[in-house]
Image (tube, rainbow, N blue to C red; front, top):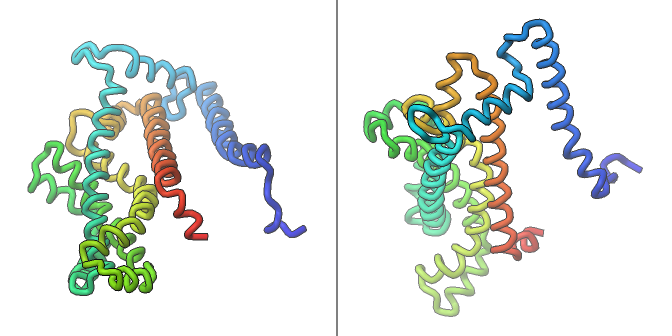
Length: 271
């Protein structure tokens, strides 16, 4: 049997999923054990005990100066900024994508503009955002919005263009006006794609958030990572990176489940 036709069973698939993570953990802890054996004060590859102690200090011990649990405060602050940025970007991207992909009079100016805006490196305009919006929460949220909105809008524009013309003609034959077409025909086709597009830009959204928090913030996951890097506190940095990755994975899983439950017809339509 050709390799391309071989499919693992459920147990085999689970093993294949866990295998690369197990290998990464094995390689890390072997390297950590070797470095700590040579130098007990080595900070580059902390042991599991050191990382657990750091998490316990930040997550389950009150900070003496603020009285807060820094780990959870950082998490809440970052998720708040990320949620606001993703929500605004999703709404604006959906409106722009619908308009550019459905209405020819708006497609002519919007499509080239979105193409150009999607090519602008968001981190390059971060100083401009700080000058225009200040160093508060707005600039951090706007970096996420500016960074992912053009990508979302272009993706949804393309999806809108793929809607069969026959559907639009039939709806107009039944008396639908432009507003009805947008709400009853175009919007249902774009909503499941919006959730998929959000899953694809989650990594970029986290990158923009961490960059903004690292430069100008007093809390947040990105702020904490860049604060402790000067002390080479890898026992804090590594758990924070793992936590960010876990949060991003949970958000991706949540969006996938929402798409599956809210739009069960979408996968079948694609097939």
